[in-house]
Amino acid sequence: MRVGAFVLAAQFPGQGQAEALHRAVRAAEAAEAAGLDAVWLAEHHFVPYGTCPSAVTLAALLLGRTRRIGVGTAVSVLPTVHPVALGEQAALLHVASGGRFTLGVGRGGPWVDLEVFGSGLAAYETGFPESLDLLLRWLREPRVGADGERFRFREVDVVPRPGEALDAADSPPVVVACTSPGTVRLAARQGLPMLLGMHCGDEEKADMIALWRREARAAGHDPDPSAEAGHVSAGVVQVADTREEAVETLTKAMPGWLRLGLGAHVTVDGRERAMRDPLAYTELLTELHPVGPPAWCADRLAATAERTGVSRFALLVEGSGDLAATERNVGRLGSEVLPLLDVEGRQPSS
Image (cartoon, rainbow, N blue to C red; front, top):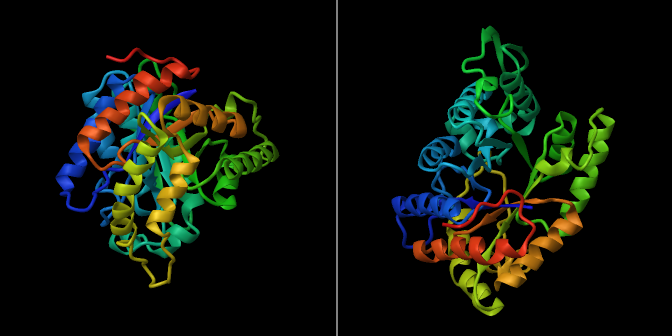
């Protein structure tokens, strides 16, 4: 099992954006000190749900501030960026860090971001497969050109080549955020592991993995256990002395953040959208994920791994909204929960 921290740089009510970003950086540094496997960074635009607009930029900072821990994006929003630009950044981080970077990509949503960045609604609704294919070719081939519906350019050299990373794989690992059967099928056809959302329960995640396995096999991939080891399950973690204390910490803080952050999203075309009830969503998350004393958290992670087959976790650690509490949460995850699990390649806490 591989357990990592999921960081959104969430702006809670009454907090400034610099405060949220500072907490995100400190959470990542604490994750390395606690012996966690990785830190995963979210990307959002124009909303306080997350104040990091460029996950690859924050990843670069954290790769420079750490020495061991993996750093990944969860996710970089592909429809709002040119795939070659993102591919160049991913290759740069892969080579410069000696292979500690993982690129997570996703479709995002039908938000005003598509208007601001000039990509348009079609980039979200139909353009994701073309963008993903171009990105993967950039990360895997020495020269790349394009003649698609959205991207057309002459063949050019790939610089830097991802394969020149020292002590690392030929290209950075890529995971795809999957929230629908369509994205599951796309990831499977490319043989790419999935990032599964925190709103999903174990049964839904198991169903998505079963679909991925069928589609991967149909596409000629061999979905053996080692090939599936890259799937990542997103969740929430809050470690406390009692289950009641952990739940109370999140239900006091998260609904205000969710109400403020989710309510700020604006659709690009004026379409109506339903927002989750913030308190009900928080309560759902506390039921689905490791929220409670260390043994409870370890049992919950082990149960999810057994039911779904997923052995990698990206756990939101900043649900309290408080810097000191977040650092304690990460520290307890490393010192009190991980020792109860069969954690792959765990480094001792410092």
